[in-house]
Image (cartoon, rainbow, N blue to C red; front, top):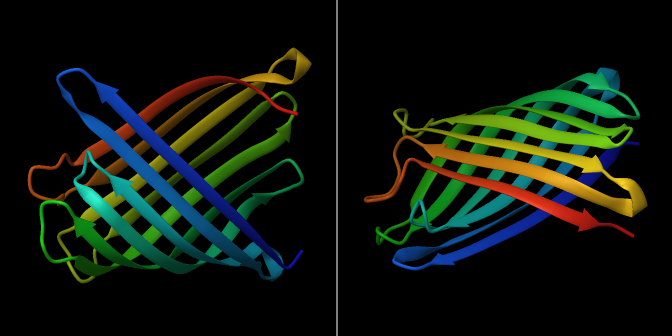
Amino acid sequence: EVWSFESTFSTLFSEQDEVDATRRTDGSGTFNYFLPRDWYVPANISFLSNTEQKLDLRSSARLGLGKYVIHTNQSYWGFSLGLSYNNEQYSTEEDPRKSWEGYAGTELNLYDVGDLSLLTSATIYPGLTDTKRFRSDVKFDLKYDLPLDFYIKLGFTLNYDNQPAESAGKTDYILQTGLGWEL
């Protein structure tokens, strides 16, 4: 294989009495070009809309260089570094924020190890055009296969921004559990 492409989409809507409704939608497309000796070039386009952080839309484009520490038919673990460009529109601000950031990330994927699968990643974004800004994203998804093609799943996502929009929280997280069936 010389390249791979992966896309994701996730949306959450929560409404409760006496509390503002929560909406969060994110998606991404990642293209990896594989180089010799387990090096790779990742290119990513992503978007995030998040009421908790007063974020109407964050569009990001990333380009970097990565290295796999583990790369087998059952798992991979890689690290990458690069640049990220953000275009952010907040519900509390009239003008969009446009900024450059560096990024450093790691991802571990155990996908063919019996009944268990694990995907976890962590990425930090130190600001380049705004040197006092720092963001991070952490994701953890664990799935266990049960008999008759049923499964249970546990997921955790955390977003942090040390300079959020006015009246917005610095952190946003999602904890989800699920029981499912696959064909």
